[in-house]
Image (cartoon, rainbow, N blue to C red; front, side):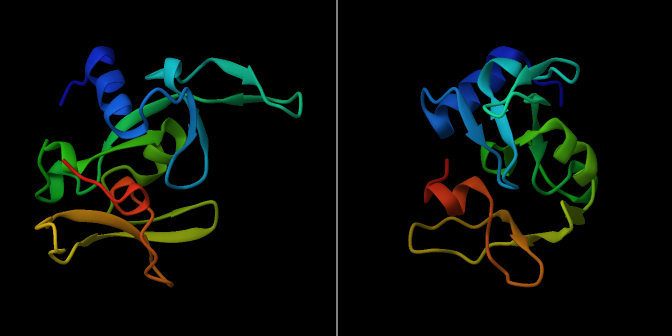
Amino acid sequence: MEISKEFAIRFWEAIYGREELVFDCFGTQIYKEDYGNTTLKRQTAKGESSYYGWTIDHILPISKGGDNSLNNLKVMHWLNNKEKSDKTSFIIDDVEYEVYKCKMGIDGYRGYGIQEKNTKKRVDWKARLKKHF
């Protein structure tokens, strides 16, 4: 799925509102303006340079039966997305994660999320922000 910057920014705003700088579900800072940028470095508060670029990831990869629905998409730092790739079990910053099928909640949502493999703690935006499309 080819994702335009316009779509990506609208998706960001649907999740994070007007926030310019947020953390992805793995705790990596991303900057709204840096969608798709894998080369630009910005100064951190500590005076170091860091990448803030991000992409849109499919929580359950298309190759594993996922779809392009908004609930299956995730804003993610580009390096974390590169590491996750099309896997349903992966490691980021020495923590093991997995894609899992959510149980139907009282709001009727049934889909996929990302959780820490050992603790089963959900880290995806739907769990953290308590909303979905």
